[in-house]
Image (cartoon, rainbow, N blue to C red; front, side):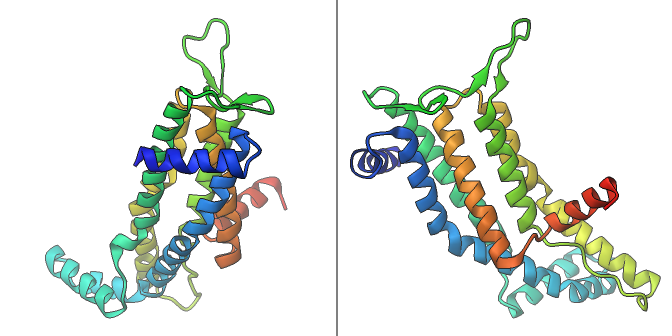
Amino acid sequence: MDKVFLEILLFFYHNLAFSNLGLTIIEIAVLSRLVFYPFIKQQVHYSKKMGELQPHISALKAKHKDNKQAFSQAQMALFKEHGINPAAGCLPAVVQIVVLFGLLGAMNQVLKMNLNTEFFFWNMAKADVHTIPGLPFPIPGVLVFLAAITQFIQTRMIMPSAPKIRKEDKPGEKEEKTDFMSDFANAQSSMIWMFPLIFLFFGTQWPSGLALYWSISSLMAIAQQYRISGLGGLALDVLKLRKLLGK
């Protein structure tokens, strides 16, 4: 797998990026995100379907509240009836993990080659870190923070927004709707923090070219996600921020 990514890097470097590794990484990030676009649409479709099925799942939960196995079987039957594959929600993340580590392996091989790795303020072959006297560990640089923040925003947008609770809903119905979305949000909560934490903890050891790739890729994903379904789950955060600022 590393060899495949290495060949792609070298092709872009020599033919499409003016022999500059930074430009090579940006071009690959843009191309890969265009390839990922169908996966993003699939993930948005999955989240939307889950929102539409929320009342049915709440009803099943109430019906089988004393039998978790029966509830699980009924829920899977409901998913099958509506053509929903629960694993589909994780597929985009799996694909991105493959690309992440494939590119990391290729970047490690690029370090041994005589290529132009200088790009603005960074050396794509070295980690983007800052060393502060007195601190026993390096501080992540701009690219590392940008990669973490953009990945958080993109993942937050993919998550569904909270369901609308109507005034005529009974207290029990309100609780069921809230409980379902809470369970669904909790199931995806690890996805919100996984990639940002990976970059904040390990980005200080990886080549800055990897942080550049992930930053550009996530920025494009944010634009694509907004075009498909708006702010998505991020709308709640924007609303909270407006209230905090008094707007």
